[in-house]
Length: 411
Image 1 (cartoon, rainbow, N blue to C red):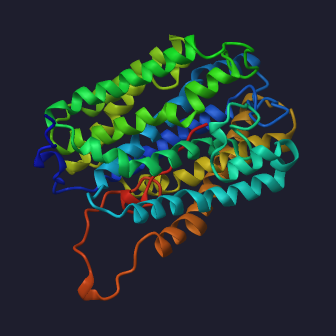
Image 2: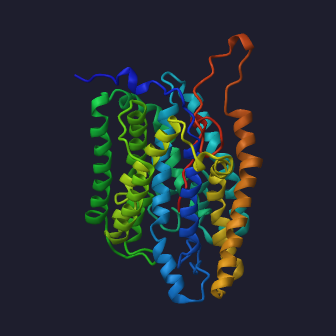
């Protein structure tokens, strides 16, 4: 017999804003930036180097140091999406209303960058299947390296987010029915499912031909990292973790404990077989940092991560991520194959960072926020009909309620 979650599991804490998770979001996006800016091979044909350092040893060392950073950032955002949506979820909310918010959240920014990418480079180098499938965010379901990162390469993660959003109202029905004393069991089952995905990737997916960009085959990279259903377990884990925190069952982990776990997890990711670095090696640290920061916010200890500058950076992080395909990958094409002395290379990286930040700010201020403010919420006919003020949970992507929030990032 299955019991429902006790009332304590779904009751909202008195202090329900999570601004520190908004600030933390920018650091995850920054990991992706450093991963992209040091790549030896661009995802845009002819796959020339992105890394700007003429000092080959230094460039290779930096690339090695951040070689797992993008994978950590992607996993962080997938878990965070599930966490925040479950945190702000209201039983009985109309599915159409939820799905409208989600589509308005991801598609306007995506369409702007799709058009810009097509005009600048994508129309000339991507097949028509890549154009159309990326437009509708289904390209990462196709196991073709020329398609699953077509047009604006970073937008492949939006394929996964779109799947998560479409399934979320259905997934939360059984998730809410998990007894409170079994939430941890189900969290660990999600971790086990991630391990199972990589076992399938290693032993059942063809290992040849080996990709020119990774140490595994194109199909293995697609199934283990890109394929949206393979990433669903991180999202579900995030939803379960939200219920764990809400029910008071999260462990008394201090911030330095969570940061130490992140360092250990990253070190493990550097030495495990490649496919296990996608999410398995770092999933426990990712879960720990999200839940610990959320618990600090509940306790009113927001600190640096919850400061106004960090919240602003977190708000623009979705745009900051989406701009990287144009600013970094296309920008390096414009610069040619030129490599630079170390001081000049650092200036080039700083220039790309500033340009990406400005692009993210523009997307947020001119597209994302106006669209969400104008169309994301149902209008109330009269003041008398107004519903009680809902619980507001800080949105890492737009500063809106978490129910109006989260888009994925990553490579």
